Figure 1 (cartoon, rainbow, N blue to C red):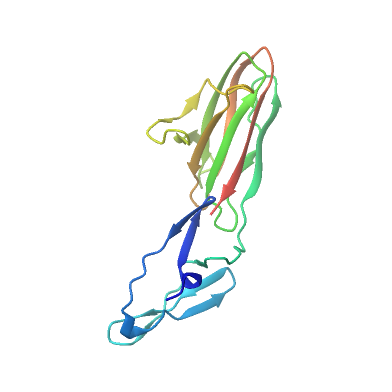
Figure 2: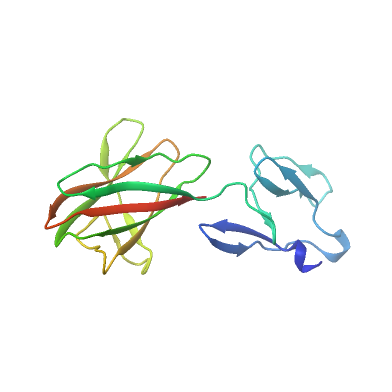
Length: 179
C-alpha cells in the first residue's frame, strides 16, 4: 500500500488516520467516490459487500474536502445584554469552535441550546486549551486574553451565546463550524 492511499477523517482541522484493517492477500480496499468524498466499500468476511444507508465520509491523503468549515458570528460588539445570533448546524457541521474577545472590563456569557421544543436551556461547552475544563457560562475572554471554547450541537438543535452582563466596553464572540 502506498502512502497516497492512507485514509483519514477530519475533526475540525485535525486529521485522524483511520485504521487500515485489511490483509495483504485481500489487496487494497475498494474506494468509492460519493457526493461528500471518498468511501471505503465494506466487505464481510464471506466476501459479501455490506451496504449502509449512510457511509462514513473519509479522504485520501492529499485529497480535498467538499465540506469546508464555515465562519459563525455569534456576538458582534455587544455593549449591553444581548442574545446575539444563533447557529443551527448545516451539512453535518455540528462542532462549533468559538472565541470570546472584546474590550469590556467585565462580562458574563451563558452558553445555550434550543431543542425541538423551542426552549433555550443552558448547555456545556469545553475549553479548547484544556478539554478537562467545562462550563455553562464564562466571565472571561478579552482582546488581550481571549477564551476558546468548543460545543457539539446535535442535528435539530440551535446554539447561541447569551451576553447576560457587560461593563466598560464590548464583547465579540465568533467561531468556526466544522464536521
